[in-house]
Length: 288
Image (cartoon, rainbow, N blue to C red; front, top):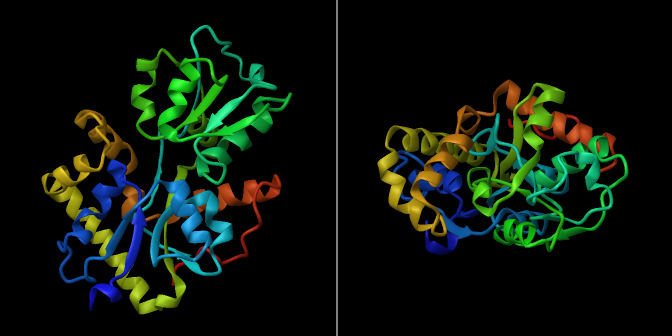
């Protein structure tokens, strides 16, 4: 296979993704497909790439699936689901602890096509009967400073912000994961791995096996990926990176399983019933 023929993949530089993909991208999955050509991009960027049909395999938000399933299939491994790992709604010091007080307020979010935002909208429909005010999209790293400095009333944050928001003097008004788990009993579906259907079933099965093997190698040999993870972690404290990996790389990363698929169907079906997403046809999530 020439460089021009290499599989083109995209995932974020977050520790969970680099941890999961390291073994495959570094030729440590043997036998397995050749190491791919990697593009690093935040998930709001990869969502757009998938909608435009770019690249062969991508990490995207589960909330973006309805727009890409004609061209891509959901792989049964490599993604991010879990418990106790949901997005948080943060507010500044002295703010009300009553979610209803968000009515009419300005909220910063990292993306309008993300699973975090979808979970937030489902929660707000119940918890903020007066309706939210302006939604402001801004880069993830700018949200907590904006809440701290009073530029917005609240912020929706994900990933490592669970471990660092107190450093900004902020408090958690609500945990979208807790709300989801209380309502459904299911894990929280966050990030999905998708691959182009035109690759064919044999190639898709090979890719799924490679991803699963990459996850298992990462668990068995965490020291192998250490430098790679930290090099892309945007100056994240190593201890926070370890917490990040422990929270988001779990049994569902190796295999979605019955609970994982139930969580994805539950999210998409609830969102479609609320008019927030197009409905997903029966069988569209199946991996054959």
